[in-house]
Amino acid sequence: MAKTLPDRPLRPATLLVRGGQMRSNHDETSEALYLTSGFVYDSAGQAEDTFLGTTQHYQYSRFGNPTMTALEDRLRALEGAEACRLTATGMAAVHAAMLSHLKAGDRVVASRALFGSCHWIVSTLLPRYGITSVFVDGGDLAQWKTALSEPTALVLLETPSNPMLDLVDMAAVCDLAHEAGALVVVDNVFATPLLQKPLEFGADVVVYSLTKHMDGQGRVLGGAVLGRKKWVDEVLQPFIRNTGPSISPFNAWVILKGLETLHLRLPAMCHGAAAIADFLAERVEVARVLYPFRADHPQQALAKAQMAAGGSLVTFDVKGGKEAAFRFLDALKLIDVSNNLGDSKSLVTHPATTTHMRVGAEERAKLGITDGTIRLSVGLEDIADLIADLSEALDAIAPAPAPTKRAKVVIEDPAPAAEAPPPARKARAKPAAAPDATLFELAGDLPEAPRRKG
Image (cartoon, rainbow, N blue to C red):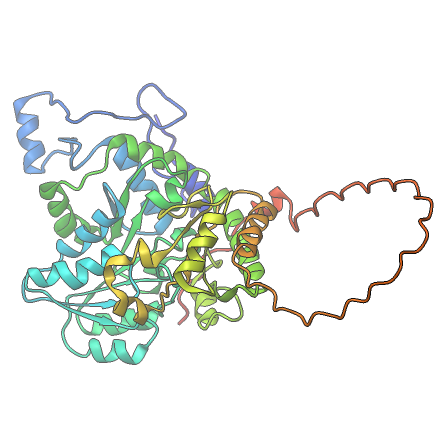
């Protein structure tokens, strides 16, 4: 059976490997995969007591399974939350967190800068159930104050946002939300629990797409909702149990194994993203670059107050709109065009025609998404190779050089031919410059995620 972990706080890297450790009587080193739909009971009485809740026993994998429990316990320990429940996808996590808490007549306030499907839930789905939805610009505290000046049931925000990397002052918004009686739900996918801990800044619930950095290798889907035990047990769990947005035990096991290397993958990805953001900012084909830890990001100070590093995503605009953006994407030979992110492979997408297509042109304009906007998720390839690929693709959309005034041509009699000199030896190509940091330096420890001051 599993050893009892030390009775002292453990650091994130240790929790990612040892958190939720649960061995069967076979004493396996790798967590067991319980690929079963149901469970049996010693007696009819035990079955009855299990359904009454007086006996703890697994019933059905739709709402509980040992592999799922191991992943829930690991995520809970990493986040610093009292409880965690898993879902089949990240969107199922957002949906469950909101719909389990809301009822007809409630009011929701959300940051305008949301992932397209999250935006659809707030703008389209909730009003169908008689729930009022209000959007605000996430970085404008005055708008939050106005929107939260009347009773509110729930606040939804993501920070940094998808795809424009806008920040929300979580401490300030959580204080305003709680005064209005709201539950605060934070989508922390872009930051991960290694870079940012929303609960430390006053959030009540944190949601994740585990598909992204946590699996991080493009294999499986999964989601998670974390919060206080009372809310999870009494509000969220009955919703999950009875509506069935359940994760497969196999997917939970794959994500459990993926978490073991997150503390090695994420620092390298953040380092690569920062270097690529600096490279892109020097290119004339690029109109703007957005990266939270760059000095020219309008919310850099807030990013550094809430996050341990700038993250693995870079957003930028190429000059020339959709036509130039498509030519750039099609010219990439190493980086893949995909709507996923947080993968070990670098991925690039055009939000206006994919992830945010259905929010509409007017709403995209409010979010700052243009036809030239590109979102880049930086993976684990060599930074020099990624920059070379980006450079060649940008060359493909570079403006043609301005024509120069043609000089007058003077034709003279040719001079007597001289004896041809021997051919010069071809110079050997210089080796590519070494990257700024070694692989081991890239995989160094991240600083601890910041905590709320005061």
